[in-house]
Length: 181
Ligand SMILES: CC(C)(COP(=O)(O)OP(=O)(O)OC[C@H]1O[C@@H](n2cnc3c(N)ncnc32)[C@H](O)[C@@H]1OP(=O)(O)O)[C@@H](O)C(=O)NCCC(=O)NCCS
Image: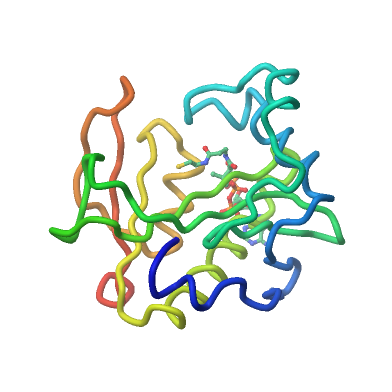
């Protein structure tokens, strides 16, 4: 994330009922490697990369940048949430100047099916609405990604459009104070 939000970064760790959202640390590296190398995680996001390649590519402290939250449960990273500006070259925008904050979520398969991603994303979106009041958040996911589609709906995203990208149908949605009303 850039510009105004940067001044709010990093936030103090954000606790939820079962989780903590915080900035990345060196001890999270194994979880990042697993997220990028897991075929299950990669199914709808371009596929997993070979583990040895990921091991070489992932830095000592991965994901340490504005807008990247590690999600921790009982002291261990279980997922990553990102709020990054959506590039102007991409299809799917709600503002003429583009650069909208885009929500991304990646959780380890063993953490699916417990509502952790919802709990963590809701906290990240709360944080964002405090850091940048009134700004929209956008999201895109393959329409075939049922879990991601259900999560987007539960978080209050509504459809703007669907289009083809990366050889698959994509759902592009937005969340604003109005879409949650
Ligand atoms: C997308 C992703 C984060 C969704 O994870 P998830 O665990 O299904 O999402 P949620 O946190 O919303 O959990 C919902 C599930 O938890 C269950 N659940 C169990 N206990 C719960 C609780 N206390 N509260 C809420 N839900 C609970 C729900 O019933 C639901 O299960 P179901 O889908 O079998 O019906 C995960 O599948 C993922 O990381 N995928 C790979 C990466 C990816 O594709 N990301 C999207 C890119 S756009």
